[in-house]
Length: 92
Image 1 (cartoon, helix red, strand yellow):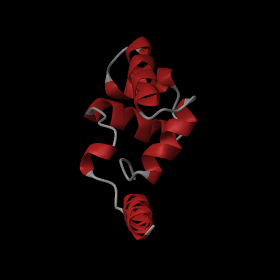
Image 2: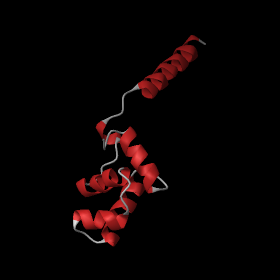
Image 3: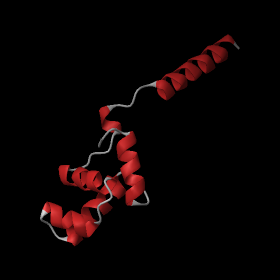
């Protein structure tokens, strides 16, 4: 009985440590500089067309960057991706 109790206690402590452990660098999604730039401009309210003009790339390319960033962050919209990037301190 004591062996079982010690085993359960050890598992509980291990689970608590994992829950409170700070995130590792590998836990954060990796976005390209262009994806981050597109998210920053989106945060400022710019459309894909406006971003294309600002960055000197096509609107289609901007949409591709935003779509990839959105997918990488596990978001369903570019606005949610901006919020997640802010929360993760990937953009400011």
